[in-house]
Image 1 (cartoon, rainbow over the protein chains, first blue to last red):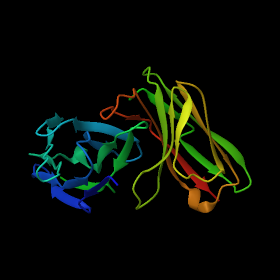
Image 2 (cartoon, each protein chain N blue to C red):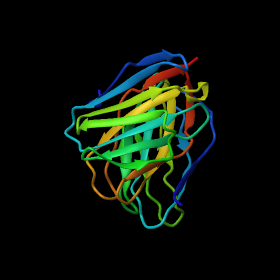
Image 3 (tube, one colour):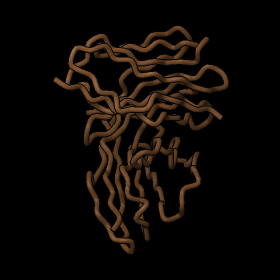
Length: 113
Length: 114
């Protein structure tokens, strides 16, 4: 079945450092891919998405490119801030009647001043 | 503010209690979802409703009973829960479009079962 694998956390960075959180997926066909972010004490917020191969999703300085060849959707940001500290979830849509989201386990990012 | 609200935000209940979680979406969507988020486990889809009809029950125990009276409201009725049911329960909604719809989440209800 479809699945998402993302790098284990926690990831600890200093402010203004470069961020990469790896995400790879297994799927039949070409599902839409998502990154969600969960700030402490809150629900999930959509960060960005890509719906087809070679699409780049971007938002708030974060980017991810849908790579069909490597079945990857890595999240990157050039310069992180303390306010980016959160848990980041990679996900894909499991197509069909219910459009289920399949999530990775989440990666905790802690940015230190 | 995502347009999806959940109440209560926190709930503590005993194993013999009956309680309900409420979700409301103001986005005009026709699909609603319940997810369970436990520590150190991936988010688990519990139920899906499309146009008020349940289209997915992900092998959820019968002590969880969903109700969707209209496309804007979703409830999760709880009875005789177990301590391992303590978790964050998240509601989401979307406008179902095959293969590419985006789900919008509420803030969640933090449930503790004593």
